Length: 97
Image (tube, rainbow, N blue to C red; front, side, top):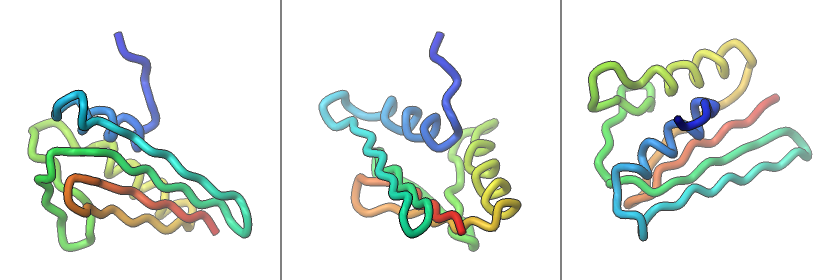
């Protein structure tokens, strides 16, 4: 049984499980000055759709709750979030004020 991870890491792990082992990676970067910022980048299959608010849409039924919980947390915490993809790299950027 895999441990329970925070939604951003859980999503990155799930995306990496869908691709070949030699292409898998997760990179977490954080800064604490002048404000707390974090970026998570991970490999994925390169296929993704975003809604009109820039939030990734899950292609599988019963999934996508982790992403929505990140958005809800950021909205309640006055934090900025950005989801994006470049090639076969997905990223999430979080900035806390």
